[in-house]
Picture (cartoon, rainbow over the protein chains, first blue to last red):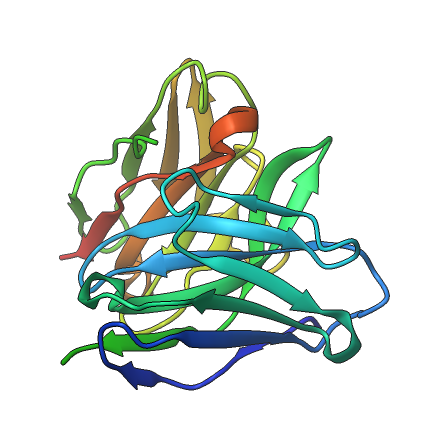
Length: 122
Length: 111
């Protein structure tokens, strides 16, 4: 059974950098995509971007392009989401999710990680 | 990109059926059969319950039914149970520029 295990909660100050992680316990030999999804407090889900675990090809949502960086370390089956300079508005729960792509098109997210709560406050 | 439109809330009594709509455009919901639905209980991660408009993953009860007509997808939950009380989100492929779009979510209350 595939499981995605995310790093723990973070409390940061505005302007600080941050990298959170998502480790995949499943078949590390397969090529598949991992997405990051944001959920701000009391709000809905927003797709941020995704990375192909096999060749590290990345797609970003236009809403997040330039504000985040998604990367991949195949040797440890881990995908990362990072910010160079956090803002208070980055306070949210962040989920990673394995992403099914069919005929080069997004199909669905399954399974999901448990989430990483990021709090940015001075 | 614009979110898909869902009603903010829906409700029903135990045993009843309730339908949640998800309205998009011909560039997302109406253009492709890649609509999925997710159930999220408070404090928990979302869980896939419907994919490709009407397919149920293994383990999801057949009380959950997905459909689509034009630019609107729908999730019907029949035989409502207390455990169905949760937030429900629709999701669709949105073309090669926008890639992925979510609905704003619907809070389902079991009365």
